[in-house]
Image 1 (cartoon, rainbow, N blue to C red):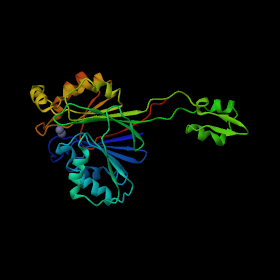
Image 2 (cartoon, helix red, strand yellow):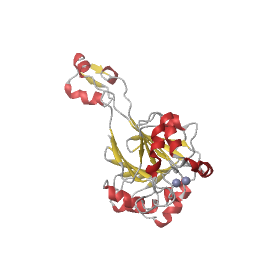
Image 3 (cartoon, rainbow, N blue to C red):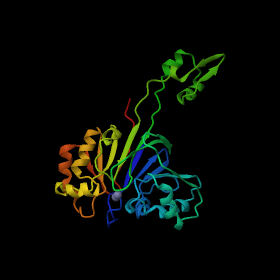
Image 4 (cartoon, protein in one colour):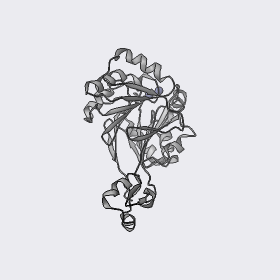
Length: 302
Ligand SMILES: [Zn+2]
Ligand SMILES: [Zn+2]
């Protein structure tokens, strides 16, 4: 099960009732944060998932509305009693940005490392498999995909047929070979075919790119920027390297997502619900993001 919560849904500046875009992810008791604008720690506090388990922060890019909350967040995680290391991911320039922001948060009770993921690289992170895709924005910017892997099914009838003692079954389930009384059984002999995991994709801020649909890759949940609702704002979207609701919906459809949550609304967009119908006409499973919208993604029953 992968828990996902929008901590904010705004772009540019935090507003009363609308924090800046960021997503909190919980998997097997561990936390991962996507973007950290001003005030993100306040919104996270309200959700109640805590701070101590936060082991990774993925930054899409270095505009202030996505990173200015980092020093306070790092201090908050320290105050929560964390001593285990924390990793920050981001596009090129990450070390300089983090060092600059940390001049006001130099002393932390845990170590911080910076990783710039290369396109196509898969990194193990908080029990998840993280990958990144360069986007098309005014600054270098990354989309992130997080996959929760699923174990292959254990087939007890095969283990029984091979006379494997029951006390060795759990090791086979974990993918280890077992030996007893001069016999050896490999996991492949008692495990079924691989099963798809859960996929969460986060993309902000960007224009649509040719590579994005494949990166969305049938995601169980796609969290996508939709800065402008009114189609008349398309020239602004092009100029400022953002998207309209319709463009986000087209991307979700092309990427065969199960559902898309729209986020990163322009401060001028006071009533995003006015434009939801237009997006749903393109991709019916479009959901208007709001602060603290959450879901639990579950493995399919197979
Ligand atoms: Zn932004
Ligand atoms: Zn930006």
